[in-house]
Length: 246
Image (cartoon, rainbow, N blue to C red):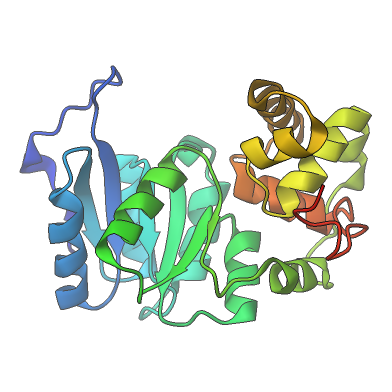
């Protein structure tokens, strides 16, 4: 077992200045070591645990309660998608978000990762600054998809039937018309600033509506909000011409 790094002397105080806690899950030790060196080089990030397979990733995450789990998909035994689903379904790990980092950047993997509850999906070809920014973005509660994971592909796979119980569409009843509109626009990939510009409101107003919608839908972050929007059909009415345009 690779486990957690209890001897790092990290500051666990939630006060301002606390370093982002990260767990790395990848079956390739050399690659995992390279990622650890890169992440630990940042003043605001620290690796608190490592795992070589999905089962160990779940165990280490439960012990360390990191802000972000950087998860590979293909690992021996339990794969990264199954581990992601277990982490995201655990109420005690609600504050831990999963960033899927893999060479297998296929359409179905992207959709499966989002269905499992991942907050982001990027390829291993990303550069050093991109990985650091990705961890910070995910920790801040935003969704992140690599350029290859296009919105049209995500929409198609999330809207497709799956071998699980259908989502509870009745949850949308709790949303106001304005909140529904905000969620649908979030699902197109627009940022709060872009939504504000489109609707002629302040970014603060957009953030307030989005946060209320997340609370009502029990979405852990924007990525899950996007998944709910597509799975319930809230975003399906948006055409490509509507996305990102005024």
